[in-house]
Amino acid sequence: MLAPVIDAALSHSRTVLATLVLLLISGTYAFIDIAKESDPDIDIPVLYVSVALEGVSPEDSERLLLRPLEQELSTIEGLKELKSTAYQGGGFVLLEFSAGFNKDTAMDDVQKGVDQAKPDLPTDAEEPTVTEVNTSLFPVLVVTLSGDVPYRTLIGLAEDLQDKIETIGSVLEAPITGDREDLVEILVDPELVESYELDGPGLVQFFQQSNRLVAAGSLDTGAGKFAVEVPGLFETITDILDMPIKSVGDSSVLVRDVASIRKTYKDPKNFAHIDGQPAVALEIVKRSGENIIGTIEAVRAVVEDESKNWPQEVKIHYLQDRSDDIRTMLSDLQNNIISAILLVMIVVVAALGLRAAGLVGIAMNIAVDGGLETVAL
Image (cartoon, rainbow, N blue to C red; front, side):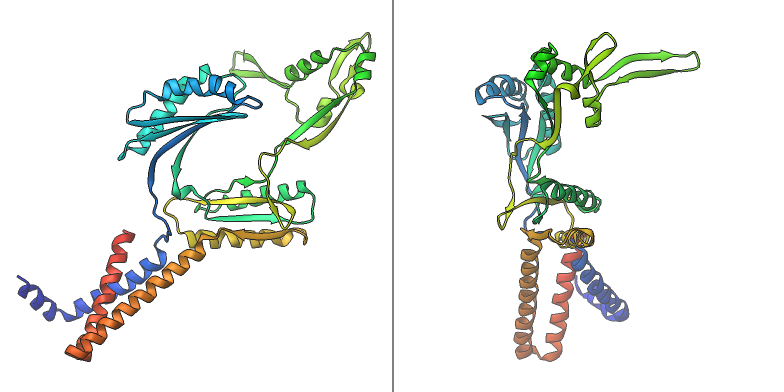
């Protein structure tokens, strides 16, 4: 059976040699270009739905948030186990599916169940989010910014850097950890409120009703029809200060007459410190199937380029760099392959001679390169 193949190879030696050279070149290119991972992408049969409501107690979270979700999600096909956890300010539902589940189908079923449960959730509750558990979504690098600068400066630099990093094609997202949401505080003077004969609860309701975008229907001009909206959203602090609270004759009582305003932050939900100084961290998550080493090199290049215009007090730290472990593993792999080829060649030299050993060594290289090409395809 093999005789015709061997005869054809011997009679077309140039073609065979050209094919071998092509395999060596393409295999080397595949080794350089192939995505390198320390852990394979595994579809873990677990999804979770999280929902938040500011200030809600664990008991109320279970009753108002989790039970409506449980009722809709418990009937999903293929569901193995459902667990719920309530905590101060929200809760989440953990769904475990049977082995061999279809991730896309499960995500669609869970999202449909969440949509059906939304009308039963409190109107003030945040939008429920459906998240899959996937090892490829773990951060491959954490970039931290710290230094003796105002906290707002750190946040501004981190947000600008986030926009730059997320433009890299191999980066999925770069969420910021350690930041705090902006908040505007309106400090009302009780004596002034009383002197103007104003009502405290009425002031709160006044601000809530004023900061809205009102849809006023549509206007048909005969030549066309377009929607009409009455903008009432606060865009600047001046918009709030100049709001009239009460009118008496030709004069009006403005917000600035009874209150002062300052910009601050909401209470922090997490903290980041380096060497005792406040810090913010960007957790870099790559896209599935992308090269970790290339992604981290691209992120580092963007950070170094952006940091040229930053204050000298800002320090940059790189944490959890997974490319270091992958480089070590690749180096070990290369050393093991070279050692194996050399050992085999030594044995062949002792048994068959130097020429046969060289052919065996070339054949092993071609076999390895051919395997890399197969994996790359």
